[in-house]
Image 1: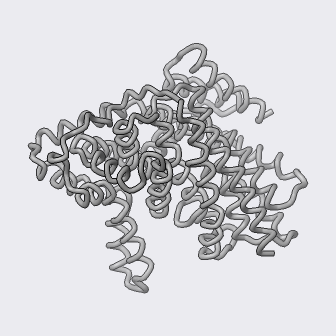
Image 2 (image 1 turned 180 degrees about the vertical axis):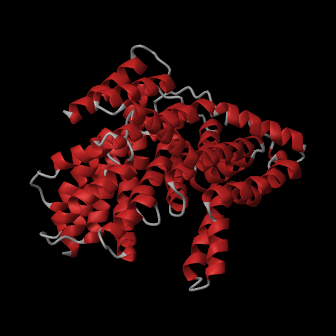
Image 3 (image 1 turned 90 degrees about the vertical axis):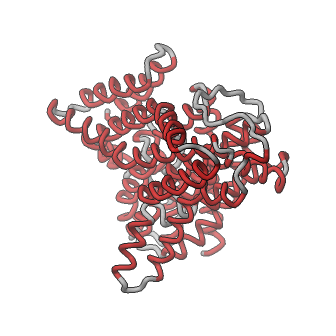
Length: 438
């Protein structure tokens, strides 16, 4: 019954947005209340879940999204993104630009969480697409594929790290196996899949792309790269210092604080305001106007993300995820396949990859006690399943749709299909690796 209710809610959500043309934010609120009532939640608890879902989702993302949008706007307006795009074209050529985007996403995706990486890299995607008159989705999907794979497969990202702990797997082994599986997955779901999207026309309303500037007015390449990727460097250096600090608690605390994504973004904005703004001849008031425009452009995206968090919280607080998990536990499949399938079904129902992965881990772990399976491979299997077919109940679906200016159909054919490829190819890689290392 619970699964039927979830399916009904998701179908209704799609129809209200595509057929009735309702505002996405309002639609999520309506469907969240509908789901809560159908799942039998007490009325006072519904209000609590709405507040918690909205607060938890935006509380963890709003600073990153807002500061990332500010940095992205400044990177575009200052010409830094144009400089990086020109350099990428010179090194790789337009013919191999999707491979360059995949490589960039692979590198920055190691230390950065997906959401952070998305908002930091989006100005470069916009600039490259605008500079060479290429479809946004064609340029962007290879980078998003890399970011998604790294986020779902490799520690220190939240889900694989938590799974590694739950399954008592060796972190180094998970990382090495994860890289082995990640590389072919990124290649197929990134540059190769992007070839099918070259003719997909989009209409983005987010004005991060700017008109080309004369070369003499562009910032230097070093300044452009360091200012754009400074959060990556700060977080990466912090992670290294923390790892090798030994028992020095003071050093660990300071490095952890300075390398926190929110703090790293604040540090970057402070530095970029000078390096890409004042140093390049802009007045401080002009830089602040750039930041204000950036916030206006992402206001609806913030509301959509928050409302999607409400729906996820309703599913959690109503106990729907636990009931689905109990139903799936009776399936008779090999552990690696079962772990992937449970995570994939939970992902379809709940939207959140992290919630799907951790819930699947709780179901599959008792079954591992009776079957010889490598815990590191189980981490990757569940991680791959948790990325399966992102759709309307996942905030990343809406962020991609709005930023790239896609229709619902285009988002399914690009973002959702890419995530499905990542999940299925990831599972295939795990199963092949299981045969090789056995």
